[in-house]
Image 1 (cartoon, rainbow, N blue to C red):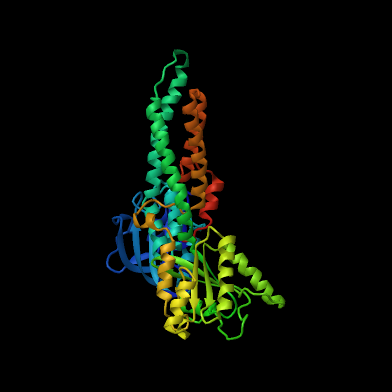
Image 2: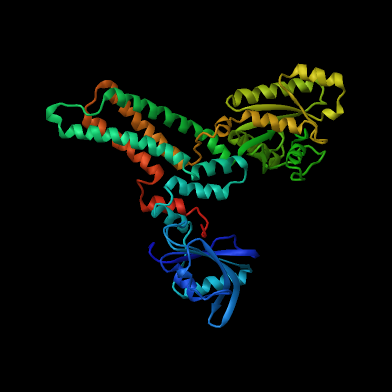
Length: 463
């Protein structure tokens, strides 16, 4: 792939719409558009216009008018990619979009590869690698929390934290490398006490960032919540109430849900993925048995389990409910469990009081009427640790960053052990270089073509 030519792509979503934006970037972007653009007010060439200006006119192919457009001019280096960039805002007809794109392809442009505009921004020093990756996360964000994390990373919050640690470590590494040049004089340029304090501080920050991935990963991908229980207790009705739509089939017939049904909603800015599962019971039905097996698979994958039971059952049946609750707690001790008594609209007040005394921490619900649904969503939010998000702390959401942080932490621990045991400077230097390498992997000081290819292949074409 060459990054010296001029590229073109549709920057807005494909298909028809009110308007579409076609983006060009490269050394010939302004000249190419200039050749086929005629302003409605003046004949000045686009290349003579100031950067960050917008011009109304027509795109022409010979004497043929393709469309009336707005042309935005961004001159290097003050553009998204750091190159000359032109954005053509045309009418959103798919035919017009393709006519304009094909015109400039014939004149020497080539179609941009996935994420190539952002890749050029990275290569031209407009963004570091973690900021570039945040662009894709921002586009994919579908709730307040994922949007907030992506915006923080794109503004360089994560990058600056890593860059500061790397710079401090690099300064000490330089002093230790200098000591190796004077090994015969047996001198120490790097104060070992200060160096140990730095290593302890780096370890603390890395541990905090690594731990934040547990929160960041679910914020980015949504928090899976499995709704489980016996057949016909109202699991599908609850899913419909949470989603506020008839997503799952509801029937008085036990065992209606044979497979898992999933959908996502945002609660308090956090994405939750609710999974309606097949009812858990003994059955000889082959299809239903497969559904029950999938139920336990979904519990394994879920971060939160909601156990639903019918509050109108007899005392003997409620004793069985207690046993099922204990089984789930014992099998999944690390998973938060919410126990929900459904169909309370059918109970008298005295029965409700007895139910709450009988089962600790039970939440009361009528999925049919909607009573208790808001309390359930509030309880779900309390289970999720979003303190770091509220405090605007750096949160790691990218698995590549997470793996690099783990490796950097491992090398820093080696440096720490080396300092405590009086390891020689040349061996300390090896571990420090490795830690610096992994820091550089995150921000892009250390890259290779395969890494960049894998990262930017996940972008949309026009970004």
